Amino acid sequence: MASIESFVGAGEMGDVLYAVLDTETTGLSPQLQHRVIELAVVLVDEQGNVESEWSTLLNPNRDLGPQHIHGIRAGEVLNAPSFGDVAGFLAEMLRGRVLVAHNLRFDRLFLDAEYDRLGVPFPLAPGMGICTMTVAGELLVGSGRSLRDCCQEAQVPLMGWHAALNDARATAGLLRHFISVTDPDWPWKSEVSALRGVPWPYLDSPSFTACIRRSQDEPTHGIDLGLLDRIVDFMPRADAADLTDPYLAVLDEALSDRYLSADESGSLRALAAAMGIGPDTVFSMHREYLNALARVALADNHLSQEEEADLYRVAEILDLPAGAVPSSLEAARASAQPLTAGQLDLPEGSMIVFTGAMAEPRELWMQRADDHGWVAHPAVTKKVALVVSADTDSLSGKAKKARGFGIPIMSIDDFRDALGYPPASDGQGLMHENWGDSERKWAKALKEAGGNA
Image (cartoon, rainbow, N blue to C red; front, side):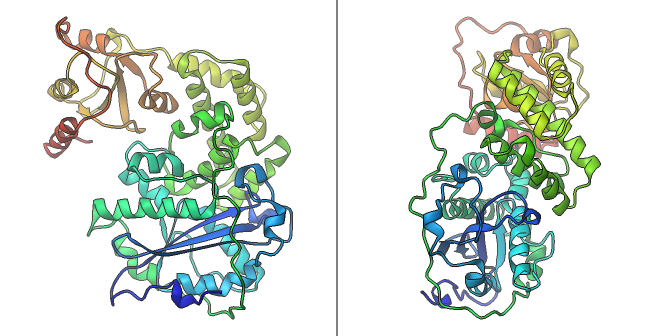
């Protein structure tokens, strides 16, 4: 076994060092005796550069849960160390470093439970540490909750998925991106002293040999898991992201992997309770989740039998009453109707997103929106008031996210008519859908001029 000194970089005095962590577990809730079965830590310096990395499978002394998700087989963990074997080693790796994870709240629950089984108080208080999912809500405007979507938005490689070391590496990549775009004023700068000073316990560290999984590939790679897997990244983020998004992120993943069944919905209740989310809030979250799911499912104006069956299955898992699905679909169909020119009524300062290949430069439409007192925005968030699309039936990412939020969509032609601009010249070709550098500079200029983007 390598010594702890091989993994803990000393750094210069005053340097902020990070430990990026990820776990794979046998289920959703430590309250139901679910355990950590894989653990990975990537040590990172102040600029986000990787210093070293470590991972191991863990023997949980119980069944392994959703093996089709994490891809770990029983034979791989028979000779793996237990959490008790690595607990002291882990504490030494984390000591003096700022702990980072994607959905830190979930990983913290399991680490707390594992140390508690050893009779050791867990020193990390709720809210301590850096959650890249929460930071992404501030710095990756319009991204979803999932590690996959955040990495795609930040252009960070994600090699495979549901393997602790792969996910920790990707999370470290997100951290480096966040450091680079905010340095030296990181969002967590004022908390660094407290985050570094967590009193990790001093424990005996018995000799053990790390056990590495046979394959780091994503177990579900290349498999179409249906509606839920296809649309999970377009589900809207919650308002109180630090409270509800950690729970909804677990729900996204569990449903998209088709792991949960109706008789396992107790895992969700236990998870919510462990996260401090009350029953009334959970019910409201579940109801809005189904509503959003229905809106995104109808993005193509068609609901297949498989998609409808998925919606009923989700409603059952979420303990929603009979009639919830028809009600959600009815509301979704009503909200899916595009606005016409006569329905445009936006107050000054409203944010507008443009999407699709248009016959005129998008900068021109951004300027026109600005002339009317509105703000062109590069991504769909809950604060956006309108999405203007070249095609109101578009299945672009922006259009799907707009439907997830219930944001109205208007065709560029109706938007033009409502504002009274002449038709585009026949000689103009279609402009590419994605934002170019000139558009980003234009959006930045509008923002600096007083826009609320």
